[in-house]
Image (tube, rainbow, N blue to C red; front, side, top):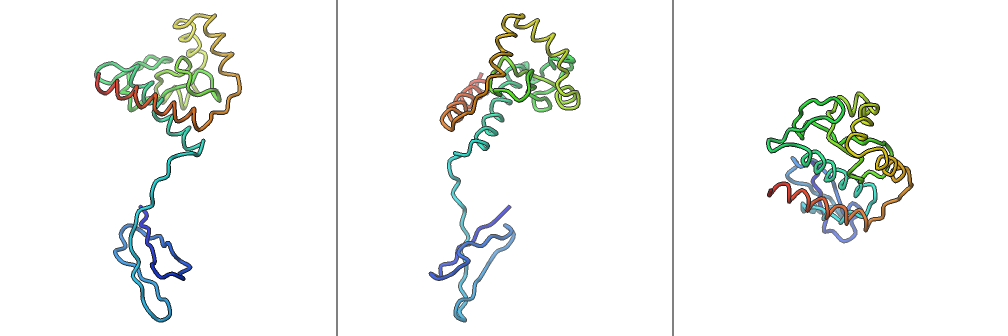
Length: 173
């Protein structure tokens, strides 16, 4: 954990110092006089970085997928192997990788073994998708997934609000 320090000497070239949070006191010497630095916390700026927002939205979306497909005790079944896992010990696995990552029909509860080590076990995932949605819908989803799309900050912020709300509904319900 970082601790930020501020020097009040007007001509200081080291205005901001960073130390461990365990450091209790920092001083600077200017013109043979010591100035004590003051601790402060940097303000968190709203996330306008696409990569940061994508990660935040994915975290919310992934949790929503896993929780919504789990039972009241928090356990769900992997769509590819059928194993029972707690939602915290599972992944939100994509049927099609490197895709529009927020199409709920393309993301389902998967155990870490199948999603990570098994690289999605796509042959069994496809069987699940065909049973759940049928060939016509699957073809449509595959088409949508392959269309390139660059999310905007506005879109990602809207998705963030949407999945925060959906998670609140799951928590309260």
